Length: 314
Image (cartoon, rainbow, N blue to C red; front, side, top):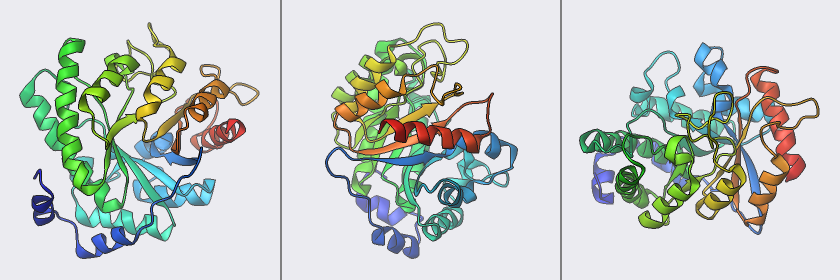
């Protein structure tokens, strides 16, 4: 399934879905143009508890926040009724999500893919299985009309061995996604992936136009498996240097936020400085709101506070 011809022959997409996708109009960016999107992870507690269903996310984004571009998380596909790994290749389920997003007037920008195999593992069998597992999410992104799929470069081994493995994995996924005009991006997400120089070297060696980065404001902990800079982080990469280094390869930006202080700012992050770095880079694209606070407010209010903070400095 590495060629466009094979993809078209074996794809599970329906004719109706392909027509819907081909009629979509991708947003156009000009100048120093940054638009706001909403990351589904902002609702992780509501989704995990069953208080909110994945299929309702597009409508909630528009109705509650007036945001018409969304970023999905693969682990929430299927809700409480279907395993996400099955939902990712269930055409009927994906078509229902496509219908709901279209009915809500939402643009499906991105799918964040987690727990589908270690793409930088030195265990080649395990790594190649992971590459194969990620392909169904590229197929799903195509059906939904997305522009981008975000992957992680998790794995075991020395930084140099993991780099070699990551370059091979990204090359394979980039080749698979290229005929579909989809991007494959890497997020700084813990361990060596929160070392911006390591990621930049991977980007340079992969050297594909549709392979890039998704700089996350918060995931710069080198000792945390997922990179969070909250409690327990023993060593943090320079946040502002990291964002600046990843921006030349960025296909999106993740505006991570945690708990807020009394004046609506982020105690762990200098948002004015971060957004200034993004603007100065000339980045054009989506800045995704991704609220991850847990103490002071509910998810809806956390998203609203994050949006106000982003708009304040944009």
